[in-house]
Amino acid sequence: MGNVLGRTRCLLRTAERGIGLTQQDGEVSILVSDVLSFLNASPTAFHAVDEAKKRLRNTGYEQILEREDWKLEAGKKYFFTRNHSTIVAFAIGKRYAAGNGFHIIGAHTDSPCLKLKPVSKVTRGGYLEVGVQTYGDGLWYTWFDRDLTVAGRVMIKEVKDGSVSYSHRLVRIKEPIMRIPTLAIHLDRDVKDGFKVNTHSHLVPVLATAIKAELNTAVSEHCPVESGSQTDKKKSAAKHHSLLLQMLADQLCCEPDDICDFELHACDTQPSIAAGALKAFVFSGILDNLCMSFCSLKALIDATSSESNLEDETGVRMVALFDHEEVGSNSAQGAGSPVMLDALSRATNSFTSDPKMLKKAIQRSFLVSADMAHALHPNYMDKHEDNHQPKLHGGLVIKHNANQHYAANAVTSFIFREIAAKHSLPVQDFVVRNDVPCGSNIGPILASGAGIRTVDVGAPQLSMHTFFQDFSHLDDKITVDV
Figure 1 (cartoon, one colour):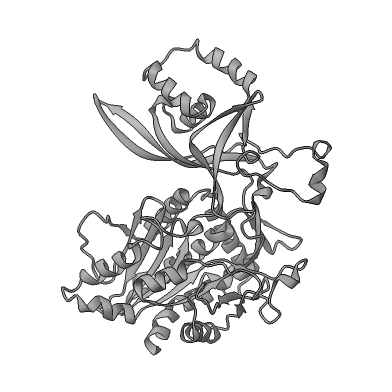
Figure 2: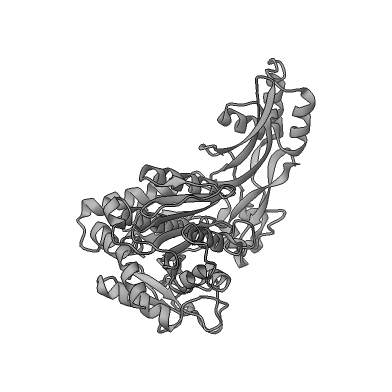
């Protein structure tokens, strides 16, 4: 336990110096600007991982590929991605030896959202609509009457010198192009008794009116075709509105028939902002859980920004940001996959051929599962257990659940609390009421899958899983550390 405390303390010292509660307002503004920059660059998990890659490369991290052999060195920094939506970054101490522990922060890159269907083309009542699937457990009524756009990844066909290749490209249309309109109260008087959403028939974004789209199509048909065939165009148009495909093509500087497939989200056009009368809050649609992803990534980067940071380190400092937490983590890139164990084993085996060393390393490791927590709501105070009411500005929250929906236990909670106390960082506790179902996260999945001692923590926030959420950036100063 002493070794775990000592190794993990390095990350905490860095955050205390750089973003502690005693910082000047100017330094706090830099942190707020940084978190907003990350959030606004990350409308989807793909974009979040791309932004993480840029930040890691800028601080000396080298990308390695899972399909290739790893030749790792002590004192070096690396990262790899899976599916472009999960990323694992780690820095190996200069005094590292096989069998030494890993000091890990885990978070996730996805948020509840609406994802476009494989065939998204919907035409009803003279409107062009976009068919979407609900992803995760969102409060879908909050998505009505919002300015929506699309973002995600697109598979592009590229022809060069007679040969055909395919590439993955990120796309984001910044202007509002869709909206899910609410039915007027004059046509639904019963709405006063509760807004009940049928997610299949009501939750369909409107892209345009059919007559306006036809006029645009009539004009474009008189323009010359630069590439592809009319047959290819008709196949694509049969699945998705040609208007949407053309907008995507314009963003990607390609032709609509070059678009082979895509994974797109409906997302907000309103940027994440610092708000509130005293600018003490951050309003954003993707706080859960990109806030924790940002804090985890920043902690690692700050704690490994110079070679001297790793001079006396005997372990491996690691951050793992997973996709698909909101839908159970059961995917090739989710926390339920072998990603974590693969990273631990391949890093360990780069320094030894003894298979027993991995088991030793796991027993010497510690994982902080970082996911946003539920702050006490002033208008629904009865929804919190009386003795466990985390508050904004109150510091990080340790999450407990006797039924193992969270992975914290007496040992891991003690370790975390001791580290926080040594650096004067406040900590709160959360237990859900007995008459309310408890949520979960990647903590128990990683703890059971790899056998690592784990504690579940998170920064407190309001409005979780709504379209636009709220938390205090003052808690961010504490969180970056952990």
